Image (cartoon, rainbow, N blue to C red; front, side, top):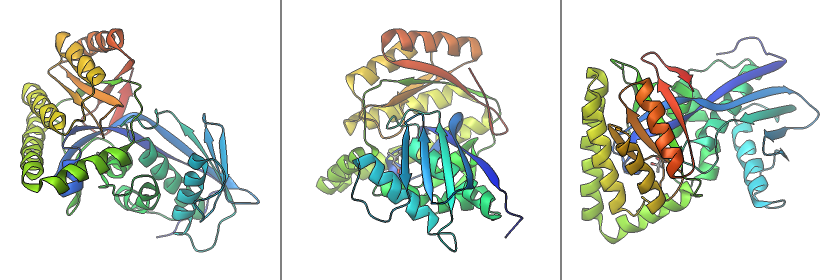
Length: 323
Ligand code: MEV
């Protein structure tokens, strides 16, 4: 569907936390994820060449189908930009400026949020009207350049916000929350590559499919419990499912000592659950708090242990406040 083109078009792609089921989603199991308000804003406007500018990274690249040339990260960005531009009829003369308010390589879905924001801004620029789900699907061309075998959960929740259940074969389904979720996100500041972590899990899976499938099935069961807990407003049950999921991630060596210490600090400050979020092996953890005051105490306890932390409130109706 087409609407009128905009000379300056803007769109947002949200960051995310995975509450339950990361890695299992790559193998067709469901994952439960929540969108957060921090994310990426993309602005598209007329320009002589197809250009992508990333702030605050200070990076500017021209659209290029080649992966080679320039610094590795820049070549990958140029290639990902070319991959999404292929969706539009002729190479558009457009500059897309992205403002990134998420740490990269930290499990908060930074690359998916950039992809969703860029596609959203290009759609508006060209007068293309698509649903959030269609934007998520289109932005997978971007995501595949960064993460060899992405399940699509990051892009789906980035485009839709709120809490969702995602399955590779069934797509995304919004989960109606009975009450607001107070989450605390802690960043270990240990770098982690989703591509590498997914490859490590794939190697374990190839070694012993029965062993890994048993754990992916257990993650799927926890995801079902977590969804029911969200719908029923049972925070204890959701926290318990997160704790059990953490042990399954530990089996795959995805919980570093620092992330473990941050989760223990959160639990010491009365979090109802705490676990690694995203690919693991570094990056972020997420804790569930009973309410806003508890969330602040948990944030301070995590920050005292290591890294940095922030509170993210997930509203019953889509993305909302954050402190
Ligand atoms: C990354 O946020 C989540 C993983 O399950 C990878 C994916 O689903 O693409 C680790």
